[in-house]
Length: 317
Image (cartoon, rainbow, N blue to C red):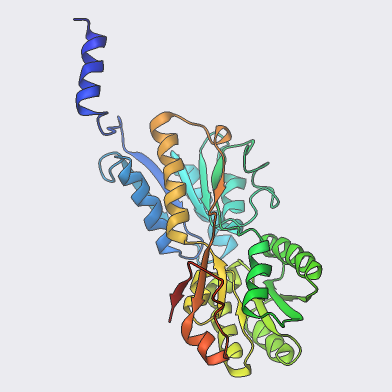
């Protein structure tokens, strides 16, 4: 019996052996400002693929605290350490990494809302470079559909986003267009800080039927929690883009699960490591369908009636 045939028989009987690399594969993880559930999902996907931390790979974990200067230093550290791959979170965080990382080093991203429109990749199907990953994008028709179902009498909304952050600006522009088609006036509110957000929301609370949040770093790092206080005090529901925002008290929204996104990105990383795939030969992805999440306590407080026509709701309280 030839050697190749013997190997084939062993593979059929016992399956493929777990990965054992010649040297530990080094992955630099830059979380921008946190997102532990996403990182947990990323690591779990690699573990499920048989890539064992400590034996097959090591992680170089860094947190920029949302500061661009700190992120640039992290990118330089990863470059100087000659990491085999980088896992980067958020649009601003990934933009900084991409600028300094060698173009031959795979860069897997997550929680990047508009990776193509922000210039990180050419398209979801073909990145055209060393990047691939997952987006926290939710098809925007879900927002309009939910608002009309939860608040059928709504005529106007205020959309809040961080000034100067491209992903949430794009989201806001497209939401305004879709709300207009549905006969709903949407006000563009670009804010610079949490204090600015609270001030604007207070002034608009008597003029709009709902607040709308975007998937930007200000909302995800304290902004939406501050907006919840205004919402509950003034009686204005929040249509949210963020799972943690709804958990903190926003009324309802179509959201993505950060653990699931991280797991999806981890599966991409595993293919790069095990199969030798290059990012430009892989497709970036987003979660479809999104999760319809409802804060039960807030909706009761605001007197919102949950429509019976909406199925598969997930509640938090």
